[in-house]
Image (cartoon, rainbow, N blue to C red; front, side, top):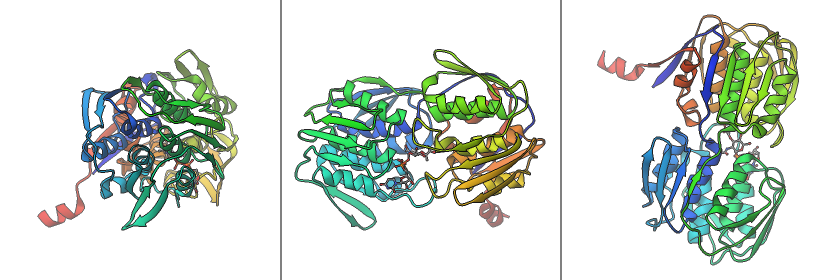
Length: 428
Ligand code: EPU
């Protein structure tokens, strides 16, 4: 196991380049199953969730080859058995995307109930409802969901509420179904648009991605292409907030500023200067950080995946801020760790009240999920003294080379091996 050791209190300065978007990449890599020829993906982030997706594909018989650091070749024609190995599926929420793609290609899919970050109960009823609208049935067999259909027929899918994963799975299952599928109340996140662009470049007929009605006309064949994944909105937002929390001055490159608008608007509200360029944003702090209120919402609202990082920054602001996040049940788990660093936050259900105290102090803390880990790293960068962040495997699910990128901005952050206690005891 490894941990990060951070000597904080130093403003971040310089330039950082954002990697490909995790939540687009996990969908697009799974969608290579629908491609009838080899294809190449560029700007693939080097993160553990993508390593798992690639392992899933190879374990089923696909050829997956690294062309260069962030460019990967996929030939999924060799897949014959539509079953994701149980342990791989369980380790990642996005393994549900293999239900949509395997169903789309084979009309048959076995995928274990997904795992991933523990954000409370994360059912997949809306995904299954979408598959059922297309004519598929499902059963739970030995912990695996088995979806199957004689034929997939285009239909109307109405989501009861906003679901990113449900929308992605519906698009993937429908893109080779017979006839027209209309998805109503679809999610509008940038990664949904990116997935649709990828599939359309291969010959799919998907219109309206990015709005709440998506129309898909099924096609029979998808050709091989080379496609570049969009930059990661949340990674960019995390560096924006890290720059603000440390009162730094950072140019964040390879971003789509439009995807960052809700984060930019909130940062400006708390007194941070954000200058938008064509493909970069410049973040700097020239005065005190101010309190604000914030509620997470589906895109284009403020993303739940930025809530822990932003709330952490608000512990350093002047005054009382109120943050509401009800997208998942459990997105304030990092708060008890942040309290070890002197943060004054009370949580009642989905609402956090943050009394800004202007400073944090270093402490040993434990990441409880991906974005919680990012928040604790930001806290460590801003705090006086030394912070040790354990469970960094969560952070590595979604941030490419975070320690290296932060060192490039002047941070004092080291990766340290934590001895395995049992092993030490046994050998001692
Ligand atoms: N939900 C259901 N039933 C369903 C689907 C969702 O009840 O069938 C509930 C969820 O439990 C949650 C809400 O609906 O309370 C929204 O879930 P959604 O389906 O939108 O989320 P997701 O697809 O599971 C993706 C991202 C998350 C991100 C959310 C919201 C991926 C792989 N994951 O999850 O990303 O927080 O959308 O934007 O795209 C992260 O990157 O840290 C992360 C957790």
